[in-house]
Length: 586
Image 1: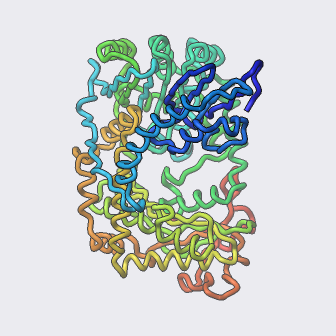
Image 2 (image 1 turned 135 degrees about the vertical axis):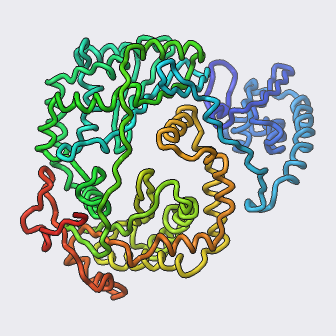
Image 3 (image 1 turned 45 degrees about the horizontal axis):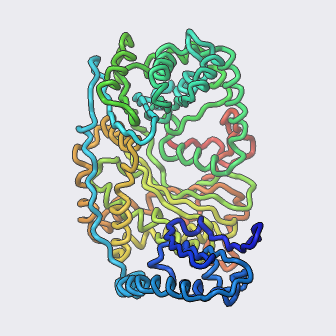
């Protein structure tokens, strides 16, 4: 409430809390009532009564709070005129209010679980409707969208870390970074950066294990100039020597910190166990290999990856299709096409089941439990995905979360994940962090739950929740046009079977409890899994004070102590493990 100059007192309506405002205005004998009630039909009828009778309290802030929230009333101070006009307004307001409340109340169920929803009607988009081909043979996916004057473009090149030479892991990632940061043959790095900033254009280039992606986001008005700069960058990178030296120095400083977080150690050693030490998935750069990545090495990797014969383009945003195809055709003209990069090579190592430990002086042990799993297109992929939702991927509805966290309080976070690969089997992995004394107990519970889904059928309720989770969130795969095109590009590069998305929900719905038990018995055998622990073994091994579990219960108590590796060289640190010469996967 605030005092205004003159003779009026005003109560301010909270417009932010009530954005939908209905206004009734009556002026009589110098007195006005303004009802600014959010959706009048839903407001309590007594608001109108209190408004009409508000003079009794002089509406000075001492009245009913419902009145404060629904009305902004002003009147001359000291007025003693009749209240009849206000009462008439209140009566008129009450009629539609009373009529509106009855059917709404009748339609509302008594309990939330009684609310029903119509079936979700959604059909995934057909990639053929968005696929085009440039005159030089480059595949392009286009999705015009005129909501904002922006254009998003991405070029996905096949190949990433899978193309790294064995003696230079990380070369593809550094090459992608320097394509963006190293300028072009015409423009030095600083000038290129300033030009992009002036155009308000964002450009990124990055590589993962299997793909390298260049992305650009810009204003529609600046698209032509931005596209020219992007293609120049990708086609003729400068690999500026000074920028390269600075980037290498930064990377080396990052490598020095690899052992600071136990999660980094766990991930590194888990990949070495799972895929072997001679596979690109487990290979990591060292200080020496980063220093050996010369401009010549970057140029060799660039020539293998960055060309139209190894690319698929996706564009969404504010454009017309004919103009966009013409712009891309012009930009790609004269850019020599090369050979498509090869598929990733499958690992030759075999995971050896057992109990493994890496020393680290920390109060909480970090644990990974798992084994090699399936390929993406395996017939068991969907049932295994559902089983994983029930076991540990489904958040607070999953068994591992309920047992390890909710019931026992042994870990803040516990989860599992099936991570298939396209060209070769991926892995299944469950993981958690627990205080040292309860690592063994939490490990025992996780393994018991894995055995349980093998020995007993999951409940109908668990299966239904898992199915609904996959089916009802299915449209999110295509929730934006850039994301939709990303799915199409990935599917084309990885040769996903045609019609996969059209039938995905039907295949999910058709899975039975017996299917889940079958895939659990096939793919989740605890006896064929590895347990990797990072932490203080002297505190972890004895187990909890209640003697409910100890590490001696797993694999007959036999443990292979792996060395903690120097963060810069990845060589074993002296005295860091009893089996420093042990190299899994060779």
